[in-house]
Image (cartoon, one colour):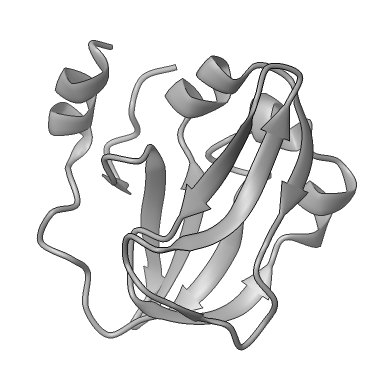
Length: 125
């Protein structure tokens, strides 16, 4: 699945969608979900957790490996997607929609986030 135009992307294969003024949704890209294989477990930060761009914010486990999830932005967790915790396979089935991970209150997006074209170049997609 190609990168979606309305999102920003991190080098760690997370996407960021600005939903409204100061609120963004974060998830893992379809590329990352495909590389992971079947996701069987997701550990997400709790509401109120302070995130720092580039720092670990959780864990994702698949039948192939265990990987850390890194926050692409600074902010405060407003909501973690309980549906993904209960049904981790949603990350594979719908990485850009139902498979989102957290909603975050933020003040500024980092300059190093990529647009869809730059992310496609990074992944060779």
